[in-house]
Every structure is written in C-alpha cells, then in structure tokens.
Amino acid sequence: MGLDIRIPIGLMFSIFGVIITLFGIFTHASVDMYKKSLGINMNLWMGIGMLIFGLFMLLLVKLSKKEEK
Image (cartoon, rainbow, N blue to C red; front, top):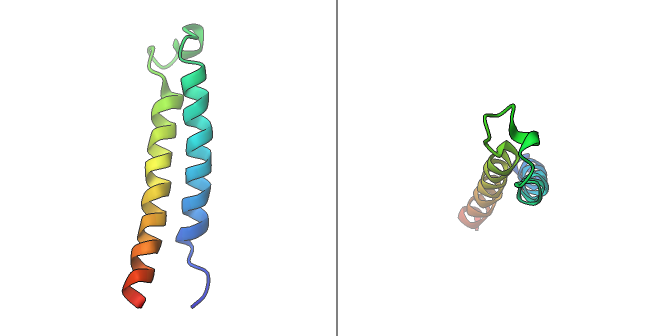
C-alpha cells in the first residue's frame, strides 16, 4: 500500500519529544524559567507526552503491518 501517515507523525513527535524532554531535564534548575508555569517543568512533561504519543503511533504502524502478513 502507500505511505502510512502514522509513520511521519510518529517520527516527528518522537524526535521533538526527545529534544524537548532533554531540554526540560537540562533546565530543571532554572527557577526563573518556570515561574510562569507555577514552578512546573512543562518542557519535561510535554516532551514526555509527545514522546509517548509518537511511540504509540509507531507501535500502531508496526501492529497493522503484522496483521497484514
């Protein structure tokens, strides 16, 4: 069949999720940066969420290919 849209979406969210998660890990000590978000490290949590979503999309692609065989 053709290109499954879940592949590029999963890759994009996974790559951005890793980048934003790493940024959140390396900037966790910056208190001034997280004042607007009430002290919550939103980079870390949104990065983790994006990574989970991206990996879920790639898992769906793998499972659908397994069912086609």
